[in-house]
Image (cartoon, rainbow, N blue to C red; front, side, top):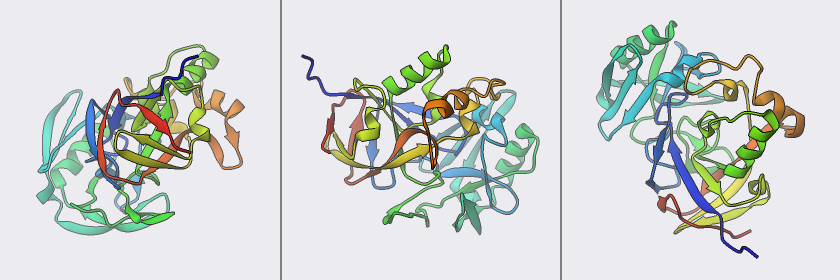
Amino acid sequence: MNNALPVLSALYRYPVKSMRGQRLDASPLSGAGLPFDRMWMVGDSNGRFVTGREYPELVLIDAKPSELGVTLSAPGKAPLFVPNGAFDDPAPVTVWGDSFSAWRGAADADEWISAFVGARLRLLWTGAETARRVKVAPEMPLSFADGFPLLLIGQASLDDLCARIGRPLAMERFRPNLVVSGAPAYAEDEWKRIRIGNCIFRIVKPCERCVFTTVDPDTGRKALDQEPLRTLAKYRKTPDGVIFGQNLIAESDGELQCGMAVEILE
């Protein structure tokens, strides 16, 4: 009988919402999630968030963050460093019905992104400390992420989905922060609390998936056959939507490293 615990097999962060993610070997963790995760996002002239749902080309942009700002790079474009100091205009923004204050004003970045995508867009920054909070846990800070600081997906769950579709899909198109290997497919659906290293997490709710999952992270194009959403809808549809992955909240700060055991507490 194999009693080996599942392990944390991959860590990702997405400095700019909908742009290319960064795979990490290790990372600090706080109640806000992973450092720099969704600290920037792209919005329209009214401050409403826009994503790869509307502009799939966004996934082709690399974003490398630092304490001083973020560097953008993309095919056919000269890299652009955007200092945090360029965001000098506080402005209301909206993410999925949440309205809160953030920062705009980085004109060079606005022009750079708009030229690449072909639409008038703005780069927005949460500020050094985000003004937003998780709705179900008002003590928890929240960046420009959809609704929770962290998303976990089991590798076996993706493997099962790919087998049903009949072709491999990159984990990156589902944009998790934590990937766990060594557990049965969809085991994460039953977890309530887990420990990884010295970090404890509460599993809050399933993640409802949208058309963004049909965007190939390597090409920036939507799948003509609507996969994987089409297959997910056949067996993962609930009254709340098509689900894949679990949203988490970190109950303790600490350090994460790939290869750490995942202990199921509840």
